[in-house]
Amino acid sequence: MADRNIPQISTGDMLRAAIAAGTRFGQQGQEIMASGQLVPDDIMLGIISERLVESDAADGFILDGFPRTKKQALDLEELLGSMEKPLDVAIHMDVDLNILMKRLTGRRTCSLTGKLLNIYFSSQEELDECVHSGGELIQREDDNEETISHRLDVYRQQTEPLIGFYRSRGKLKTVLAEGSVDDVYQRLLDVL
Ligand code: AMP
Image (tube, rainbow, N blue to C red; front, side, top):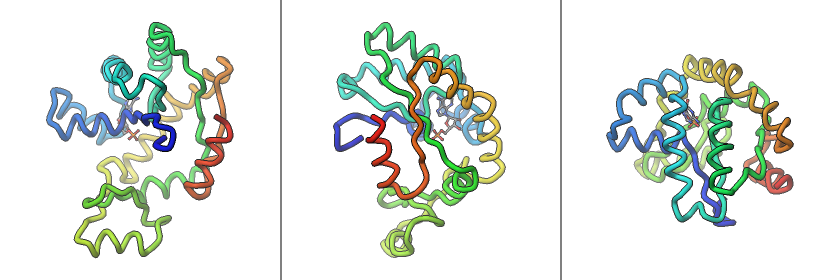
């Protein structure tokens, strides 16, 4: 959340950066992610524990894409307990399945600017701007229909139960994540 100086910690972005940098995680991780499976919980705990002690996270952070399993949620609870920084809130971004499919299958990144675009939802001007300045619209390796359908199965089996988990902890807030980015952001601020 740039306007509040709180880092957004995306485990997916961190894993992609680790692969691009050719770290030890490298090829094994790339295969797991390209197939839409989850990276093992112990690796995720290691990554998140190292990240949360960095100085920019001292006054708070937003975790994006973590936890994704019950084990990760329990690990996180223990980790934050030991840091004396208990979780404030877990946000459930609620979105219709058809819209979600378009967000994923249509997602592109401009190779020049890194800007996130969508062939269904971005304006033609925004898409043209990238291409006309010599950029390419890149699709994530795991944003094809087959892998997406696998990712959604994994979500239903392993991640969706966390809604109940955080509800039972009294931490759950649901945000309707449909409509424009600005509208969703405003709804998010309203529940925080
Ligand atoms: P994302 O960018 O959040 O959609 O994540 C992309 C992929 O990275 C996922 O499909 C998983 O393979 C892997 N990944 C990201 N976060 C996690 C996590 N918390 N636990 C396990 N795997 C993860």
